[in-house]
Structure formats: C-alpha cells, structure tokens
Image (cartoon, rainbow, N blue to C red):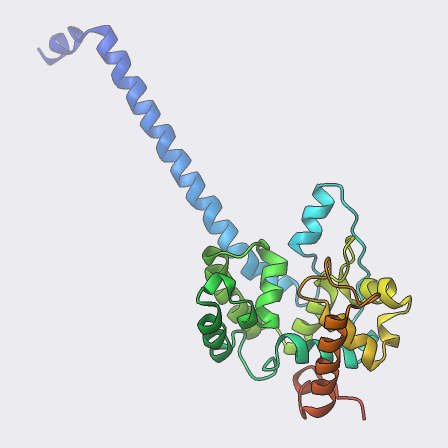
Amino acid sequence: MHAARRSKLPVGRYNISMATQERRSLLSRLIIGACVVLVVLLVLPYLLTLVYLVVPPVSTPMVWRWVTGARVERTWVPLTEVAPVLPLSVIAAEDGQFCRHRGVDWQGLREAIDEAEDLSEARGGSTLTQQVAKNLFLWQSRSYVRKALEFPLALWIDLVMPKRRVMEIYLNVAEWGPNGEFGAEAGAQRAFRKSARSLNAQEAALMAAVLPNPRLRSAQRPSAAVRRLAGIYAGRARRVEQLGDCVEVRRAR
C-alpha cells in the first residue's frame, strides 16, 4: 500500500525534492571546506614559526612584490655578519623593552592606545616581535582584525624562538628602501654602498630612523627630521646599559 502511495507522487515534486537535497548537501560541503581552509590558514603560521627557527623566511610584502612582478632585493645575512650597533639602534628606535617583554609590551601598548585613542592606529605599541609576526604572516594595512591575529602570534614567536633569532629575522625581512630593498644588507648597500657588517654608529642610527616608512624617509639623503631622530637613537644605544643583552650584542665603547 505504501509503495502504491509512493508511486503516485508527482514526478516534478520528486525532482524538486532531490534538487533541494543536493543543494543542501553541496552547501554543507562548501561550509565544511571553508572551515577547514580557515583552520589551516590560522594554524599554518604557528607551524611555520617552528620551521623558521632554522630556515630563512620571506615576508608577505616580498611575496606580494614577486607575485606582482615588482623588484625584490634581499641578501640574508646572519646576525654575526651585522654590525652590533645596528640591532642596538633598532631596539633603541623601535622597541626599548625588547629584552624584557614576552612578545607584547602591554604597558607600551596601553600608553600608545591612550595617545592614539584607536588600537589600529597605535603604532608605538608594536614590538619588534609583533612586527616580525606581521611581516611574516599578515598584511600591512592597519586593522582590528590584523591586531587580533598579531597578538597571539607574537606571544607564540616569543615562546618558541630565542630573542636573538627574532632579531635576526627582523633585520632580514624589514623593508629598508623605496624600491624593494629588504633586509639590513640591501638597506646598507643602497644607503651607504657598504655591507651591513661595516656600518658605524651614525649609519646604523640613520637606518633605524627610516624604518617606519623607508619609502618616504631616506638614510642615503636624510632630512633634518631623520637626522634628529638618528641622533636620539644613537644616544640611547650608547647610554642604555643591557639594551641588547638578549641578542648578545653590546653597545660601542
């Protein structure tokens, strides 16, 4: 009797029901697939951080320039091949608490937010570790989403990676010129026609002073403002004891 009743269902209604089920099944598979992709994208940076303990990484700006056919110049150099005054100058300029915080300088962040009144604009609160996280795994434009992703990444990087390695990566992925120059070696060659290992204190301070925006600031032809900042950073690097202890570099005597 049930079979007879089923056989009396209109063919059109049966086809519509099957099509609806197929669409729902396809939608479910798409949602599951999107969730899997999202999880992979979120987890991948944490796994790559372990790889980057020994493998020289590239930054997302470098990858973007390669994809778009723009020029990229970067020569990886180990920290032992960089003048010790450069990491000291960078710490003095960008993250004076680098050797003390655990990836995020919460006090500095609170002060930066108070001044900016906007988390996404609080540039002064970004540590070197946060900048490494951003350069390796995230996009460059400021947003709450990027900051939300950046914080746990910075904490993870600091947990698994020695400070010396964080500094080594930073010095090799930071953008240091207006035409695709990445890393201290390319930046030193462009600005002073010399290797990063041969930089003196003044040159290192000038390179540190252009880091916020090397496309507008120049260490090769520094403006009065850049020279003033470089003087401040050079003074900090000379005066502050134990500034670079965690990366095993000492200020010049």
